[in-house]
Image (cartoon, rainbow, N blue to C red; front, side, top):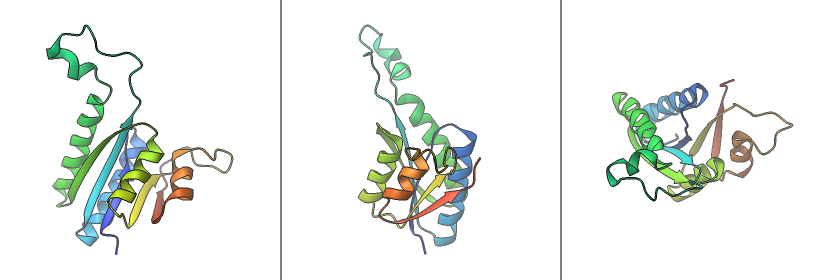
Length: 139
């Protein structure tokens, strides 16, 4: 059974479907879901922005909000969830977290996956993961 499951997420409807599938898998095993979302580092710093507004212009602030929402969805199903805000390449960050938590399963949406786009997130995860991978039909 898959007790430690990692899923990547952004704010797209297809990612929401992948997260829902991951929640279902973890709910069956009473395991732990790790939801990973990444962001690109800001090319400009928040220098000159008043302190009370800095969180709203930091590149990871929207990611934290998204992960809070997805974590609440998992908890409402009785699933133990941990969220991971990561900076950088989404596929690599998912794989890094999967390695760190000794994941049994990585869940990814199929969006962008086809045999001609080998650098897509689901293709990268499918080819480089050290554990089982579930590709959820999302497109």
